[in-house]
Length: 402
Image 1 (cartoon, rainbow, N blue to C red):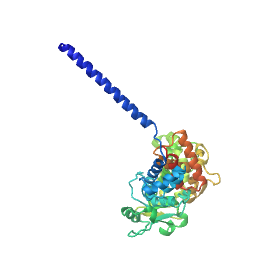
Image 2: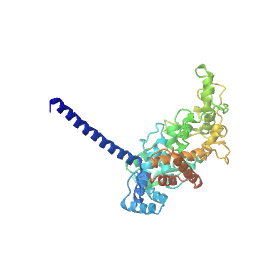
Image 3: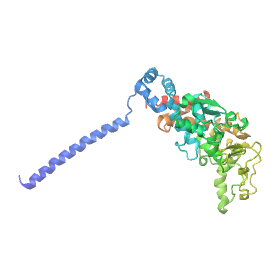
Image 4: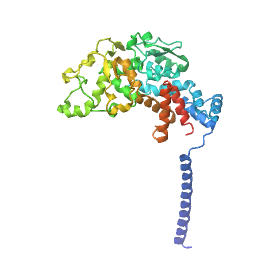
């Protein structure tokens, strides 16, 4: 065979081998793709382990796995999830990581343990009605040796508890802000008046941040998603310019969309300020904080805040879809009644359930099936006394086989 023929034969042989190799590789990748696309069958033990890991963040012990597997084998997935929510790491890891971003403007999970986070964790552990989280005179402290006393002026009590890796499930103790911090009972308003909540959202500014971050964290809406330029503008404060940049259309088409409802509701916080010198919340009963009257020259004919009365302008118009409770008046005095108004909305319940579902199922409930599941869990949440721990249990049970 001449050199040219040998070359052609070698090329043909290599080409055949290459094609054969590509064919085998294609088959392998096809098999892998099928395996990824096809959910593996999850038996009772696999379901039990999955539930525990998603709720507690760690695998269960052999004994706990046996208990949970017995529940899943009997079809009681929620019962298995209830065992998982008894794990210490559910409180110190899963809940802490969920709640901590709510406590700061940067929305970071890396903030230290604080009274806001500890109070929410305690409420979940004790099945305290979660619709009181914005209004109750409530505070959870840590009962463990070697800790500084809880203080309205610093976070040392909670930071040291975290440094010492204290078991929050075992050591959190229910108390009140009026007892521990000395706030008047009427001034206490759930997580809003915790030290962490006030230092993040009542500090300087105009107290509008407290309302905005409540919308983000507890109703799952930022202000731009609820803009409504059809609401009356009569209670927008003086500090909002009516002709920003010399163009009144900007005010009418943009600013009004938020401030027409934001300002009447944020008025509930008119007696609060976080003092950076004393590093604690200040409440001035029957006296409007100066921050509500700043920049009055921006529009002197604007609203001058006289007290802490508030009104919910969203009960009419497109944001009526947030589902306001018709048994409440939609107006009142002070933060406590505003917190009750917001937490009674359907949007509040929807937000809590959606966040928990995402936490334990590792996906947003975008499919029709997931949305139906969330709707059922939300109905149970509202009818069952707003127990957030049960939302974790029901959500984990719903996606145990996935």
